[in-house]
Amino acid sequence: MLTQPTFDKLNHLKLYGMANAFRTQLEISDAQQLSFEERFALLFDEQFTWRENRALEHRLRNAKLKQKATMEDINFQHPRGLDRKLLRSLASSEWIREKQNVLLLGPTGIGKSWIGCALAQKACRDGFTALHKKSSELSSSIARAMSLSFLPTALANSVSVAETAPRPRSACKQSHMIFRSKL
Image 1: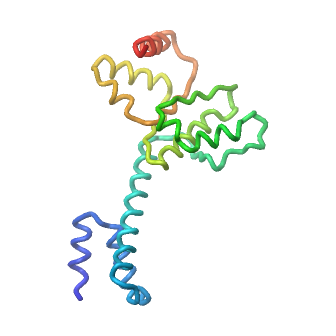
Image 2: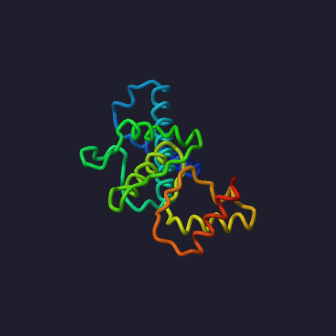
Image 3: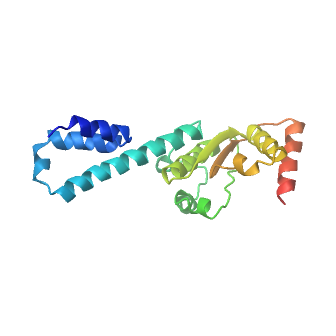
């Protein structure tokens, strides 16, 4: 059997995961003992996994998270008063499906940004989009989008992690305008 035309066609169709799995099946003699359906299922599973992983990489890259944080790495032993049950609930991403908001409050250095990045990373793993920006940049983006009537585009991400910092009075006025207009 001529396999090179098959590889060429799989790559032309951008079925790279399937092409790699087919190559692996040809190299392993045990694969020949599987039925057609089993071999096809393995090819399909590999393509599906490859595509899902690529989409996750894309979501994480576009999220521009400032810290490599995961929900699984949260240290509950640190004395900062984290509610383990609440964080487990947030890790389910149900709050995103229900279009709810999460606001992390606390003193400087307690880990708010890290937990925000962990929630955003988990959201990306669950198939949602996320974006990490300074709050002033986020409010500017929203204000600009509102002036151009493109608000849904500005808020297209499922999760936005906004870093707060002391802001000038003009940025506070922008934020007030944004929240007032949503009421």
